[in-house]
Length: 315
Figure 1 (cartoon, rainbow, N blue to C red):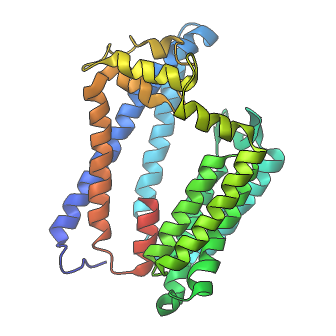
Figure 2: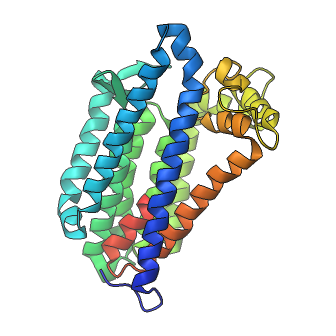
Figure 3: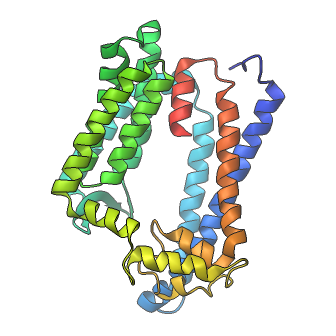
């Protein structure tokens, strides 16, 4: 795939190296932070050497992820284009299946439990949906400005899995799916006015459903806007503040010792902030910034509409 005139081949090669380097850096930091957040609970629940069991499992998952990454690098746009429809169908089928036989935790069915580990089919559906929208927008080409072909159909491809994810319930992932659908459709050539009206309407319906039918949604908004002392959000902010400039040191943070109830989940950044301080937090944010910046530069070299849409959605 040739670059656009304002993006040289050497610049693209440099950006690819930066993207891979930042990805590996984030994976390494994730490995360290994940171990630090889980070492005390592992020892408490599993006894001696249980922390090493967790570490080896995390390393195994990391190795599998790297192998999957190397395999994905070798998949060309044509192969991805041909796989778009079956991938989307499989993603939707998994979302339906998880509602029936999925693992229930915290009053939600979002996970499949396989071989001692678990995964969320919404992650599979998210990628498959982006690829499918990319294939559709490439197929309609110059007719992407039409409302039905350019907005209704591709947005519907995102809305179907989004509704299934909302039923699990997972309000956040559902909104992310809708947003990614809008972004992919916009990059694919749809009119902004058409998209804004459709997305705002869908978001209003999803928000109304989440606020009225899913009690945890309103509670979570209230907790983030005004966190109660002792709550997950309050404890995470306290842990971040406790880290100061350089942090307490790996394994020495209060978040890892039970101060933060769900330290190894979405709040893992609080562990990084406390144990590695402001410097460590800025390193994490810096790696994300590098990833996004050079990922965007790679997108500027895309000549194919399909590659541009898929690349934007994945980034």
